[in-house]
Image (cartoon, rainbow, N blue to C red; front, top):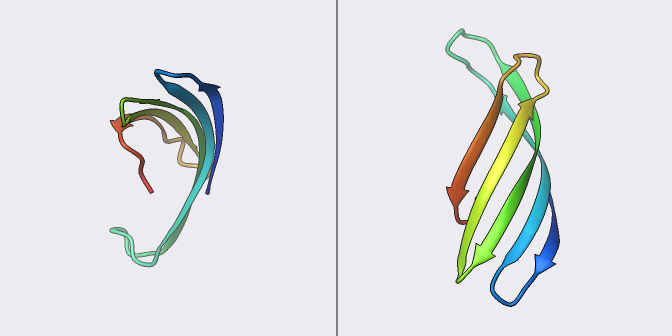
Length: 77
């Protein structure tokens, strides 16, 4: 789930902020059991000339202490 908010709507570019939640359930892990993962995060979206650049920071809620920065081009579903 993702909540998007446009912050700047200029003539040359648009800037947006996002907050997101991601969840997944694995029926069979490499260790042989099942596991449910939950993450939350925030990010920025910069759109200019038909291209979207994104920068996100996600934090695990599953107790494994894994957090990550990601960057990319285009929107991801």
